[in-house]
Image (cartoon, rainbow, N blue to C red; front, top):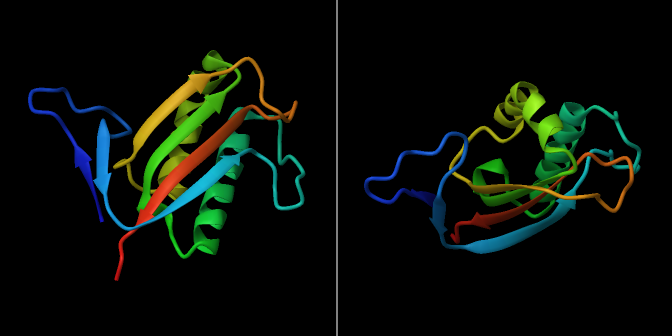
Length: 132
């Protein structure tokens, strides 16, 4: 079980938490990009790559006995801020479909490139599964 941390007097953020407190077994998911299990890109579209990257995150979590409800931290690396912002409605829909909650300390960072030249986004995650 995790708890969102909201300092008194701060405006509530939209789509993420300022901080999260959790205890239990930690799972660290490496940066996931928009390719499938065969390392084939599903699309060059940002939103479709983001959806696939989130699917990959969920698959790795399941392999560790966890699910999206256990995510406490998420970092997005994007190669184009404007492309990310233009895709937010579709990305938000994918996020709601696959992750389903916003009690996650989240950051998004624009980078000059990712290791895979076709990748538009890379997402890494920390999850905490309660003991017992």
